[in-house]
Image (cartoon, rainbow, N blue to C red):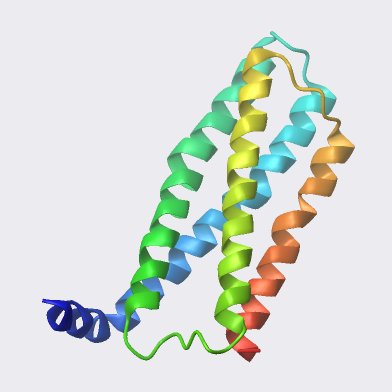
Length: 153
């Protein structure tokens, strides 16, 4: 059974890798855009206004319709790559660095989801500046992930 699965993963390696890359691109697009929506939401929108409702709708659809499925697909195809024979050598540092960075990116994704709930409840206390600063987190993580995978440090 295990041999059948590993043969399947090896045969479908390039398809799995392609789907992983597409999923990551989709996830990252959302993870960069949602904090920017929060900046505009907090700086330019009055709570309870029709514009507030519009922003909440945009944020919900981005998170639930794009980011959540893209994150799940990223994880599924990423784990499939990890299980593909010969792809990852855990004796090197790079897969550990990538794994830690992906966990941090997942934490950031959930942090954004919690911030969205604060906007819904009308309890957001963060400023546009804080959302701008937090928007640097995925950029740093993305650089660490890409360089660790490409350079295989």
